[in-house]
Image 1: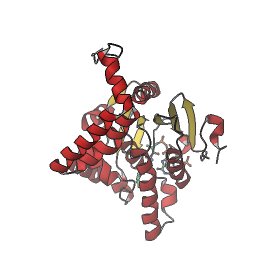
Image 2: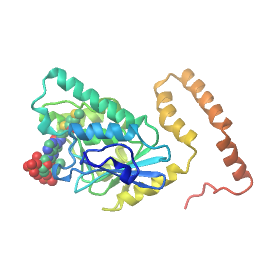
Image 3: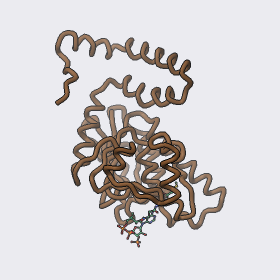
Image 4: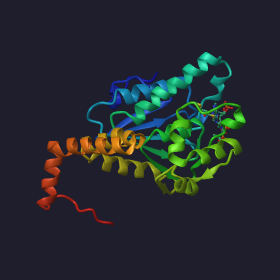
Length: 269
Ligand code: 1HE
């Protein structure tokens, strides 16, 4: 464990494989296990869960990135050989808990990817809300060749991003998609030059942080739930959320600011 990071503004002890820093309302969390290509071992997964659970109130968005040449090489395969079936199930559930804290946590999360985004690394990225890919990024699901299955929520999240058929094809054939292909498929929302990812991620996180907290909550917690509902329930949930959001004081202040020409226009720059 590294020092409980009151030193960097967070009150949670993190493993050495995670570094956290704060920049105003943004937290930057870095996978820092480059010697193992940021493979996710148990302490790292527990650290992710702890970090996202204990985010201080002043943080309004998080950027997740990785040190070294690769975002994340997935599950730490070294840990796998020792597990029996029951332990394997428990291990997968521990990933579910951790990634759920990201997907349905306190604030939106921007993933900044580069190099390998494979297996559990892709599952981790898929739990984030906005994904930026540097041109070096590539995506793969090598579980088939390792004799295993996804276990970090990938079978639930990835078909929603790229479709079940594409995920099947990736797992069966080991197909590796590059950054541009990944953008078209839905793995990333942006492709940026090498080493430009973090700045882009921070820029997006700052933009996200400037939204009203209520809207960010509605987008990250309610929108995905509506997507799972039937149409009638979806319309009703939308109306309820719309009413709640509009009734919020911050919404009223923001609408007034626009009408009084004090707010930025939605203009393509
Ligand atoms: C690892 C891991 C790992 C690297 N677990 N130790 N993931 C995979 O199948 C991807 C496996 N990794 C690779 O294919 C390659 O390492 C990379 C393409 C990511 C990077 O290649 P390279 O040449 O830069 O590095 P390297 O020499 O292969 O690895 C450097 C070290 O990291 C080496 O250890 P060392 O002690 O010999 O120096 C590697 O063993 C180690 N390393 N990746 C453990 N993944 C919840 S279910 C999720 C299921 C999955 O994620 S399956 C996909 C697993």
